[in-house]
Image 1 (cartoon, rainbow, N blue to C red):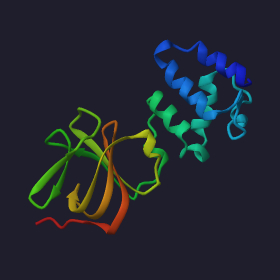
Image 2 (image 1 turned 120 degrees about the horizontal axis):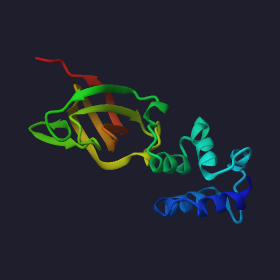
Image 3 (image 1 turned 180 degrees about the vertical axis):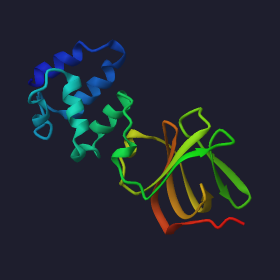
Image 4 (image 1 turned 45 degrees about the horizontal axis):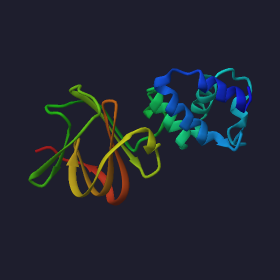
Length: 180
């Protein structure tokens, strides 16, 4: 397939997803051609789905906006493609979010799901594609979450039943909290 074939394939896509697909086409295009970075993915493809799935399958592209946009558009489960520093799965929630304790204050980090079970991920800055998740807020200081004490500044994201912390500036590594 060539650029024109890719464009025609997108033009025939369902109307509901066409705007997002046209934005993806802009990401991979330079003028009336596919960018040299993405040209190899066109070989052997016959549709926009094949093209973008080929990009998504390449771990070398998992930090790109194209990869993140396709993962979001197709609701792909992508967190397992990255290596977290901390991963806690199947945490039972008693509220509508994962509790983050600041002294006497409490923040409920949303999970992106209405389920009462969540997963918790902690990544170094840039260790996952933050564009694929939904940014919620940033938190800083000393606080406790999911049995770990954190000291520093973290970005908080949500994605399909998961809370993700991205370390922006840490005073020290997270340490497990001793239970009384």
